[in-house]
Image (cartoon, rainbow, N blue to C red; front, side, top):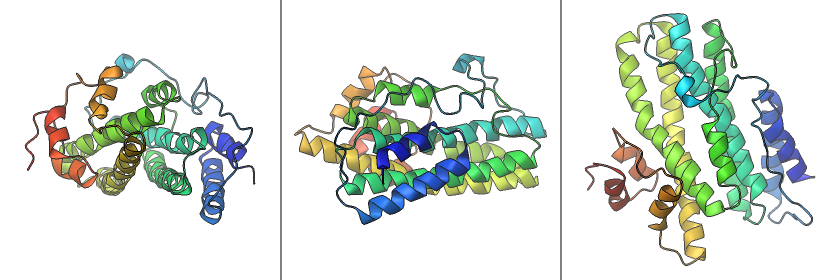
Length: 271
């Protein structure tokens, strides 16, 4: 099996069924093969995200504020934004396997498992979008996560710090806040369905961030680096000064963050 060629196809395809089928193939193959040769393989650097032909990509500042959730279109803008995050997360998880072939079987299986979870999250959200009369690609998106993957392509330590331990961990902070804002509208069936989906995503994202935490610390240990280098990496990508209005201490602790890290990230009360 040409694992890396199949991963490349999965990453660049904009068809969710193709991504799911190929990811499952890769997961089954890696489950049965501890050592996978990457001789002669050089990962491509992708110039554009796989959704470029499905979505209009704009600057984040051009995206409209998502406030009115009482109308199908208003709620759909929120659902679409979350759908886009989950779609992007599929490619990011696959890219971790594709881009760092030197990593062991455990690493490959972790991120292929994450990719399959993200496919399922996407599918749940896409179904809700269809219920509301819309589809993925009906609203503009930004490519912040794709850009973050590009910037960290040559450094696996940076990748583990920035994608799971920064961006996905930030999702743990935001997810409950979104559900809280929606709570007084939960009598509406689409809102009730969205809150349920958000809970599934929340519980599984703790596991995903924990996988990133494990591999970040594993790489630090192998390189004889103190894990406090995390903050140097955030500073390198100008992320340390980003305002964090709420840090979900309990979820981040479950995912592997220490109290010392959480205090440095913001005004977090942690014991």
